[in-house]
Amino acid sequence: MSVSLATLALGAFSGYAVSTTLFWVAQGRIIFGKVRRVRPLLSGPVVCQQTVHPLRLAVTSKVQLEGWSARPLDTPQRRVLVYFGGRNEHVGWACGMPTYLGPWTIYAFNYRGFGQSGGRASEATAKSDALKIFDEVCRLEGGDCIEMVVMGRSLGTAMALAVAARREVSRVILLSPFESLEQLVRNRPVLHSMRWALHQKFDCRRDAAEVQAKTSILMAAQDTRISHPSSLALVAHLRRPGPVIVVPGTNHQSLPRHPSTQIILATCLNGP
Image (cartoon, rainbow, N blue to C red; front, side, top):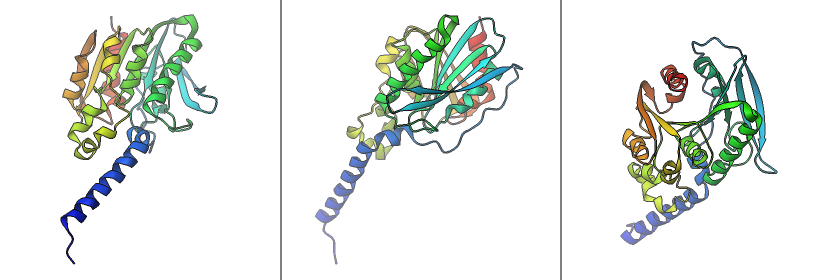
């Protein structure tokens, strides 16, 4: 039995329509992904005593976020770094960063639906939560903090920029940043064909242009997810771009936890 071209076309269109509808409905899950395992950070060269505290932050009456603070002991002045993770990333590993950074207190919270955080993540909720996280850190630290840095990786760079554009920060550090999701899907034929259904756009350009603080960029040597041109396109929108560093021996996944990255961060944060 032969199948007409019209029937084939109708079948193809129906499949496209179903796929696009699912993409629209499940967009947050697709973009943020799902934590499959917690990737550890190897201990660094700094010998320091620290306390790690589990945290819970109520961002709505029904949703709490799971987080941690890692505070070095016996530090005369308080320096704080707030970290925003990427897609599929459980940020519990960030508690080990003081073994590289020394006298820095680290805060990190899982996105909604990650780890023990409740709810479901979306662009709107993640950016709103990021501001609440930052404000809560400021409340907990009180007037003891002399430096406040926000750092984001990949998808988390959008949250770091959203905070830095609306709050006063000392410095911004972006790992594998990007201009927008529309830019990223251009080289992915399936997603690009459904780009009109992309309502969570994560357009970072406007926030980048509003950031007053110096912003440093770190890129993986081999990155198949976010290319160097994509990251550099975002840099062009920054008011105060800092150094742009390619970290040898890293890829998109390993960049934040690689010892070379952590050593570079320590140099940037603890240098003159």
